[in-house]
Amino acid sequence: MKTIHFMLLGAVAFLFVACSRPKGDEGGIRFDFGSESNVRGYVQVTEGMAFDAERGFGFESGYQPEAISLPGQSGSLLSDGVGGEESFFFSVAVPEGNHRVRLILAAGEKDSEVTVKAELRRLMVESLRIEAGTTKEVTFVVNTRQPNIAAIDEIEAGRVKLKEPREVTQEAWAWDDLLTLEFSGKRPIVCSLEVEPVDVPTVFLIGDSTVCDQSREPYTSWGQMITAFFKAEVAIANHAESGETYRDSLGRRRLDKILSVMKPGDYLFMQFGHNDQKQIKQGTGGPFTTYKEEMKAHVLGAQSRGGVPVILSSMERLAFDDQGRALVSLGEYAAACKQVAEELGVAFIDLNEPSRLLYEALESRGEGKAEQAFAPGDRTHHNNFGAYQIAKIVAQGIADSDLGLKAYLVDGFSYDPANPDSLDQFAVPSSPIATNLRPLGD
Image (cartoon, rainbow, N blue to C red; front, side):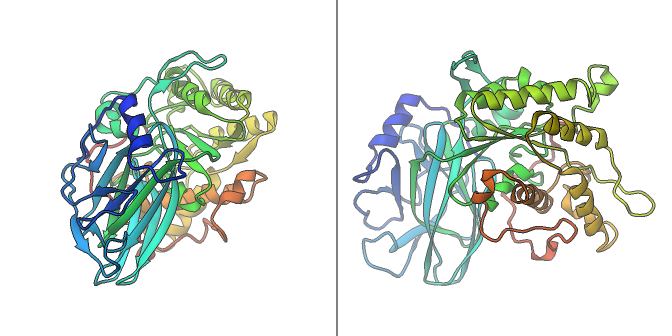
């Protein structure tokens, strides 16, 4: 299990600016992985270098890769690296914000296939194939966050009201002052890593368990997979949390946190509904009353900061009628989302109908096939495969919109939920940390 770390911001800032910063960089740090001679301008990371709070970087406890020599020029970044057959995690202290990550990955005597995830299992590099004896360089952008809220305009200073124990112990590393990378797949080998602050558009996500960064297998959300469909020119900042509603987003100050760091031109993608339904039974709200009002508060908040709000309707739970048609349980909430988008003139992406098309298409391949998109015994929360398909629906919604954000999608992206990917060809490996605890919410 990943160790939880808390560090002083002063120490973090010193590390990020002072540790072997290459000439010309405005902050950032470079690492040379391996036990051979270190390349000038890079901080050496050897195989036994466990994370140390004072040093500010290292491998997470329980995940210690091996040093591996590689054919190449002696003393170069490509002469060696660290890796092996098992997954491993590497963390480095960084300030809150967006960071450009550059990696040189290698294959030893055998071909390699590497997947890289960041923070809480956000997919950054998907099953990258590297031929034996060769290397590949990859670049992506990672957002990190902390719970402190800075006072700005009408927003008061404070902190996000994190959930205990879920966000304080189980998932505290989503709110720490580290950037954590997970390396998995077939024989992943890392030769070098560069991390530097970067100013790029940020896509903030707010929502429930079907959106948030789930920390452990087999549960995954589309917010953890959508990162794979963007170029390294935009950051995804996932502030969603399990079991929550629009009302919770306001009350726990998650929206305030986003607005306190939002820049003009950033985006706010919002998707609630599953848990908001409970307010009907409780007599505390409904889809066309409080749900719409609280949604509008999010839209107006983003616009007040120069942001671009995007409303998403909730994907459906898994259920079929006798004719094999996916049942509708969130139809009124989807209709309310569309109404608010039309009333306020903002972008709307429908996940409700496309998700039903997805489930029907999967089920048409054989009875019970749609269940393969969900965590075992669950009909609300997806697994890696299902979350990947929902993320593609979101990405296609962006591609079909008038949003400038579509320019940042990977080239040639296209997806039809009525013709989803085959599970047999899905290649994203599971993360090594698992749980039997179901996420909050339904």
